[in-house]
Image 1 (cartoon, one colour):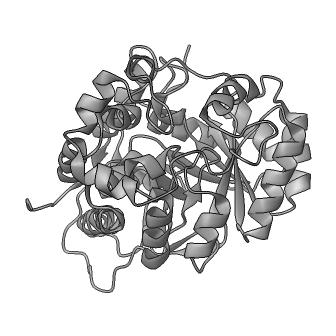
Image 2: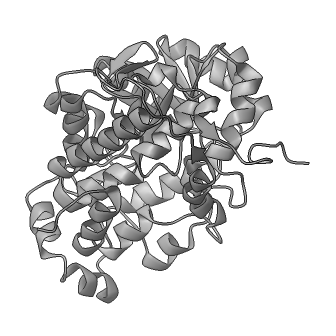
Amino acid sequence: MPIITNIQDLKKIYRRRVPKMFFDYTESGSWTEQTFRENVTDFSELRLRQRVAVDMSGRHTRAKMIGQDVAMPVALAPVGLTGLQSADGEIKAARAAEKFGVPYTLSTMSICSIEDVAAKTEKPFWFQLYVMKDQDYMSRLMARAKEANCSALIITLDLQILGQRHKDIQNGLSAPPKLSPKTLLNLSTKWAWGMEMLRTNRKNFGNVVGHAKGVTDTTSLSSWTAEQFDPKLDWDKIKTLRKEWGGKVILKGILDAEDAKLALNVGADAIIVSNHGGRQLDGAQSSIRALPSIIDAVGDKIEVHLDGGIRSGQDVLKALALGAKGTYIGRSYIYGLGALGQKGVRLSLEIIQKELETTMALCGHRALCQLSRDTLRIPVGFADSWI
């Protein structure tokens, strides 16, 4: 086993271990993948302000996200197909997050169901909702999340229609994988992954199959999914969903200051500045570039979080210094999960926390609440609005 010191080390192992179609699912964006790339690279334009001869003792990374105590303000983002990156992957990720002390978010399009994860964890997790046309299914899905004691509902706003991801189309991505000659050839080289998958019965979308009307197998699932994302989603429908849920609601997919104000008006508890990991509108701003104008627009009236491009604790610190109250990692923990299972998710969190704490100290701070834009050297024009 090679020595693992950063998230990129986990990514290398992950790439060797999982089938190509699932690696490509993680490591891809829509169309030219410009936004996917810039989500990561734009962080490097922000420089850190080093301070010296400052008391660094007693430092910690503890914080709160929507009132919940967290070991650091980093949540595991909702990621579809997690249970095909590693057998029972959602359960493994949720347990790692629980033990570490950060929130885990289960995707609507997970392999393990809400009930599966609830049965294998002890503390409440968050649930992410895609807005579908089938209102009865939606209501029952939220009722299941309530029954599982999910403590927050994350409503994704930027998937009314599906962005085109060339790699997924070329690979014939499906759950479970379709066994074409090309797929079989690749799977034959991933024997450790295959042996794990043979030991689990969870290979399909656990929140959909057997729950949505008429969806009983892979064939019916594909046709149902293709037509179910709701293009009519609007702010009135978000108000209705918030009222039906009755608990804490986070709105994910905000990339514009005007939309942030509208999210505030519908009574959301938090918003997530996100472009869906660059998987929807290619050519949109990176999340980190969009963050400052959104913070300026809503101030402290609503909790603002950031998702997209975080590959290190330094990235987390930069987002917090710009004003975010929380951050999310998706690909970073998927690398760990695919590489080493639950242990790998834990390791990804440990790496990020260590980098975050060390960077915070070298910037002259002992607690994350001391961070501000003054912690950074921000280039002129970095966060200017588009003309």
